[in-house]
Image (cartoon, rainbow, N blue to C red; front, top):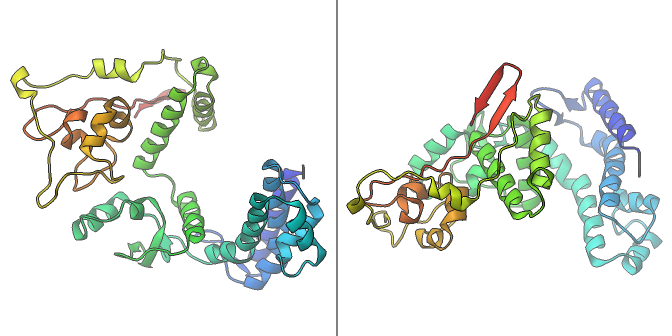
Length: 328
């Protein structure tokens, strides 16, 4: 495998050189100012980095020097290499090579030329609230993915990027520059927990558990204790219900002028009822629509209309770092 540290060091040196030549801007983040510098100086190094990714994905068919030439020049300017790719590489590997070429030549410089929170970005919680007031039916994707901005800290009211690769690239850079929002953190931890539950080996040995432990350690914290795993059924046994027995009969809330309520993911109360032990815990308090979540709307999640019940299942993460501790 190519030496990863050397490649990263070379990329860092090229970026520093770009700052000195005014080909790159340093603040508020790396911004590409000179497209020629990208093609002549950065692309060859990024191609080396792409070769590492290709090797990790077990790319087969042609040698690495041929892979690099194909990535740099594309399928129409590499002569016999293009024929070798056609004859020796699988369809999936051909797509991967072409994707890498397109990314380095087109999508990457396009994304690097844009300024986060000026020409694009992800919505903050306040941005989302303002947008919801204007358009209560705003698609959930506008909150999760990068969208165009019309000015500093001013998201576009309705515009979205059309090309999926551009959306992916700008979303990745936006999250890198702006960081995760609290709701993103909750979604990530819920997904990680879901992965851990699906594994059947001992709890401390599960990949998702090890990944979470590494995140805590990388953040400078320590795992306070290894708690016994509690199943979803046991969690729901511990759910407290407010109100008398005669209050337990309820109906799912239905917004005015709608046939039924669905959350931001398109999941209805009827869908929640099919598997409440899983779906309510994972999405019941996060996938808001019409200003409400399933724990407020659906009887299956201990919500609903004319029902004085509230789901009290919470995701608890303990992080201890010396004298500091927090519970989320």
